[in-house]
Length: 271
Image 1 (cartoon, rainbow, N blue to C red):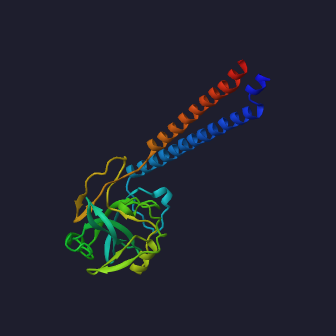
Image 2 (spheres, rainbow, N blue to C red):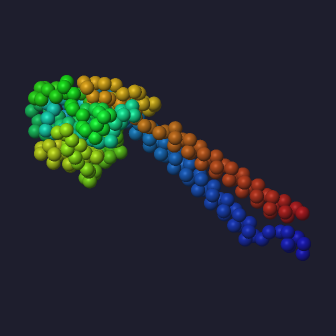
Image 3 (cartoon, helix red, strand yellow):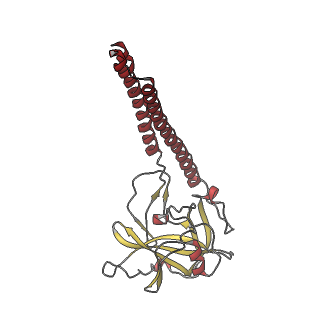
């Protein structure tokens, strides 16, 4: 009778084993998922790095296959259009308030515009809401210009244009300041309306895009604009770290389950 009281039932044994197995399966599956994400990020990062290292292209079409052309260098000759100019608000350069300049570029002989992220301009600290003037070296209207930059992916990776799906940010706040149109964010659809001309499905940045992830370098000045190097965020190490944590937890749960079963059932039956 004493042994019957001390010996746990089969139901309790089955429940304990199933609970332990379920937790092990869950944590192991999460580890596998993080491993898969690391592999996906590594594949994407390698493809982006190869695109950055490839020869520059000179597209003559306003429509590109962004899945295959993202991060390719671009080399075009043409003109910047003065009327196709907007500022993107709420930017910063080294902690100081700034705006990001996006201007339409017309390739020579083309009938469409390419939105180009030219860089950032500092606001006047005394009048932080007043839009800054364009640099004199960037305002030669009508002059031919050799555009060298990087084609951005669907999720733009230039300053804070990154993370905005091109064409989906339709609700934007617009304001006039110092003769310039200032927007709260960027939208290809709205930019096409503003320019009143066909616009390409891709955006080009003149800001540098680094081939390796790392700490962002200080802003440099090019043709009157501040440029911030944008590293490719591969995030492989982060996913591998998460995978290691889940796999470790899975191993610990296996040991805890075996220890509990041994202590409560096997050892208990010995007494």
